[in-house]
Amino acid sequence: MELVDRYLKSVGSYLPKKQKDDILRELSENIRSEMEDQEKELGRPLNDAEKEAVVKRHGNPLLVAGRYRQDQRSVAFGGQWIGPELFPFYLKVLTFNLGLSSLVILTLFTGMFASGQPITFSGLVGAIFLQFLIQGAIITAIFAVVNARLAKYPERWDPQKPAHLAAPQFAEEREDKNHDRVPRVESATQFFALTAAVLCFRNLKVMTHAIFGPAAKFLWLAPAWRQIYWPLVVVAIIGMFQAAANFYYPGWVRFRCWVQMGMNAASLAIVYFLMQARVWVRLSVADGTVDIHERTVAIVNQSVFYTLLIAAVILIGLLIVDVRRLLRLRNTEASKPA
Amino acid sequence: MSADNSLFDNLRNELRRGSLVLAVLTQLRSEQYGYTLRKALAEHGMDIDEGTLYPLLRRLETQGLLVSEWREEEKRNKRFYRLSSDGKLILKQLLVEWKSIDASLNGILKG
Image 1 (cartoon, rainbow over the protein chains, first blue to last red):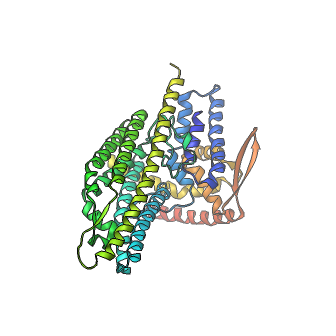
Image 2 (image 1 turned 45 degrees about the vertical axis):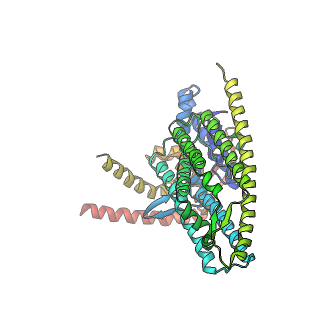
Image 3 (image 1 turned 120 degrees about the vertical axis):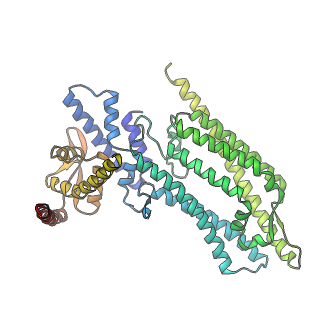
């Protein structure tokens, strides 16, 4: 693929679908006009370095695409934490995470309500608010770090290997993703997300309260969760190590593929182990309300079972993607001239 | 020293950003496409990054200050921009404002 096409593709991956074609068409014409103009001046075709300089002058694809967006909202508190370029992605991640958490909490409360537990409106709002606070803070911190890096080093990008938006929920053409380089933004996000996950594992008791809300008074996590604690931490630390390595060596694409395949396989084994447990939540009280609580426990256990099942299916899908990616990498390397 | 330089760069960029819209609108009294506009501005000492200018043209068009159309020139399809009637009106007002700021600043500078 030609240099200009790669650049346009990279800008396009960050643009909203509606405007994408029109903007790319215009951008393409402007870049090519500039190149033709320089060729006329020099009286010869531009060499690779000169073409690269023209593309580089057009700016970091993420920042350029951000400037084209009509939505110029940002997160600012004192200084600007998350600029308009990252804001749409921040909003998507935040909405996805908070939506999922709200769904989990609502399922739990429905289970409690269905089994006759006393439910209060303030209890429900409190549990949701706590989740919003924790997740909002973590996600905002991750995006603020990425934003600060972008603002400090806007010129740090390689026109030969411009990054594409790689998160599966945003990628429009996942198959065509750049295979030569791991975007630094992706490595940094992975590192901070896994750090946050390890911190959450460390404070399992606090997290139990955050997830279960008032139900944490009579719900205990079954021993199976404690047994997977260290395997989970080890998988997360390996992921952090891989992300840190890829941040400094973005060209280690094959390394990332192998490590992520290993992590997904290990996660699948952990999920399989958890599924074998069959009981994931237990009662922590032994009084006259046991009957009511037991119904809640049964509903929660059933929800956990289906969640684990979905997690297993997703992990199998990711493993298939990993294998395909490795095969594609091998084929690409094999087809390169010696 | 480098902190001073970066402060100066920031302030200079802010100053230029403010006058950029005025320069673009003035230049688009006659029709041009993105690249020729950038060149024309550069020739007048107003160098603008492509990554800043092209999105700015879109924004000004969305705001109704510019109109554009795709047309073929030298066997290539290009998007040509020019001032809209609203744009002409706003430019007139902005130029009056600019001259007033210029006069005030000159007065301040002369002490």
